[in-house]
Image 1: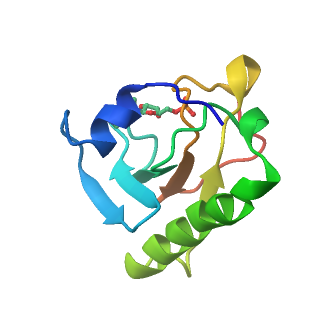
Image 2: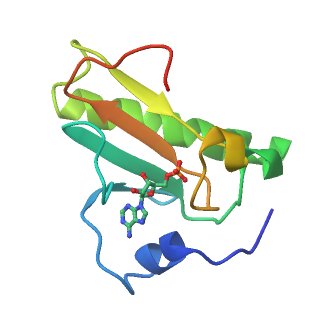
Length: 116
Ligand code: AMP
C-alpha cells in the first residue's frame, strides 16, 4: 500500500470541492471534472493505493467494493439496462494520470471498442 498524496486525498478530506454522488465507509464516488460521457463518475477507495500494481490480496474486498459501488450507482441512475462501462487505468501506457486507484463509470452514450 502507498501513502501517496494526490488531489483525490484532498477530495476525500473535503479540502477541494467535488460533486460527490456516492459515499460509504470505504468508497467515495464523484463526478469526473472532464466527463467523457453524459455520466462519468470516479469511484475511489478512501485508502490511497497508487496503482493496480500496488494491490495486495488484503485489498480484494476493497477492490470488489469499487465495482459494486459503480454497479449500484448505475442501477440507481436507471442506466443498468442500457449498459455502461467501468475502466481502471494503470500507469503511463494505461493512461493513468492520478496515482490513487479509481474506477471510471461511463454511461449515457454508445461506447466503442476497442478504445483508442
Ligand atoms: P486517469 O486518467 O484514469 O488517472 O483518470 C483520472 C481522472 O481524474 C481524469 O478523468 C480526470 O478528469 C479526473 N480528475 C482529475 N482531477 C479531478 C478533480 N479535481 N475532480 C474530479 N475529477 C478529476
